[in-house]
Length: 457
Ligand SMILES: Cc1cc2nc3c(=O)[nH]c(=O)nc-3n(C[C@H](O)[C@H](O)[C@H](O)COP(=O)(O)O)c2cc1C
Image (cartoon, rainbow, N blue to C red; front, side, top):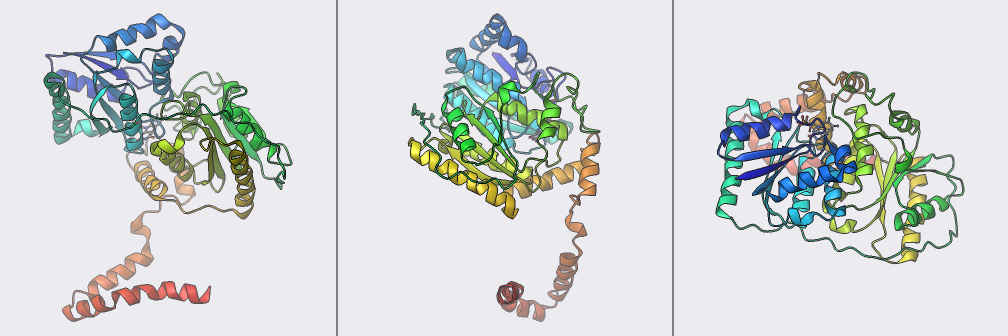
């Protein structure tokens, strides 16, 4: 059989993910695997439609497609996202329709589930027959049993194609609206009180998103910063070259204006991303901005600040994207101040939401209001902390210095208060009588400290 492999690594074949593909290829020599470096070659594919169509022909001539990609900032790399956009924009979805598909990623498992959910959704939108995702840790290939599982997964995929196995969809098609938002007049603009607000938008003139951003701008008495990301000098997506890892300096530093632009926003109190939904995410341009921000490694870049989103499109149908938005805010140690969409289909409601959002941006900034993180931020922090302490210690030297100097290596073995208490209690309950007594008291005793706070604070 012929298998088209859509390689999502910006590094092309100098890629960890491709080693997994090559391993599979070696285990199944009876099949042809054709690798298409769509992320690495994206600039060429964008400019040269013949080259793009050639890639699409490979898909068309295949019996199955492997979406093989590294995780990049909660999703796939912006270049891969752009390729997906082009498939829809250039009207070649029929090449994918009815093809068997699966997804293979390598990563450190940070938000791998959201990337896989995205790709699976795209496959469903393309009318592909999706078999299964495989999210490998980037180092799984070194472990015998992990290689066995990988081989089994790949074998099952090939077998499913051979048997023409039945498949079902996991994601319903998105219902989009053609509603045109007409902003009303601002009645009571908010005083920013010196709070610095920066909007980073990807927008067409006169689009809903442009009108929403404009209305948001007019919700304030003073001027706020609004940038169209299309005007920001970004020569390309993150290359994954890791040249930034020692000192947080991007390899593009002298080639484009991204780093300078990003750093110029470091004193913003509020950052709002604005854009229209494109497929099942925001645009690849916004994703490029996020990926390029990786020159900061795993360092949270908006500690104690506010972030928000202004979105045009069916966000309420995209739980995955909503999770990414919250995860993004929490991982940058910011507060998600609001997410405003045009989904109500009613201009005055959108005006009211934008006004309310403007008030919250100022109030939350002034009050230093940061809601506690959910599992996304709490779990994500622990994952990064452990990785930077050990496996990613090299090459992420700048991360290590930052984590160390900011008390982010908050390992539980240093938590003496709980360790001592638990140690004493565990010792105590080894005595059967004490064990029984503690068992009876645990519910009420546990509450005492909390009750004291309620009474005294
Ligand atoms: C810019 C960038 C962003 C990344 N983002 C994530 C991420 O969000 N989650 C994760 O688990 N790993 C992330 N990684 C790690 C890569 O997914 C991982 O190293 C992968 O194996 C690289 O594969 P490749 O060599 O095929 O490109 C990121 C790496 C880079 C360079």
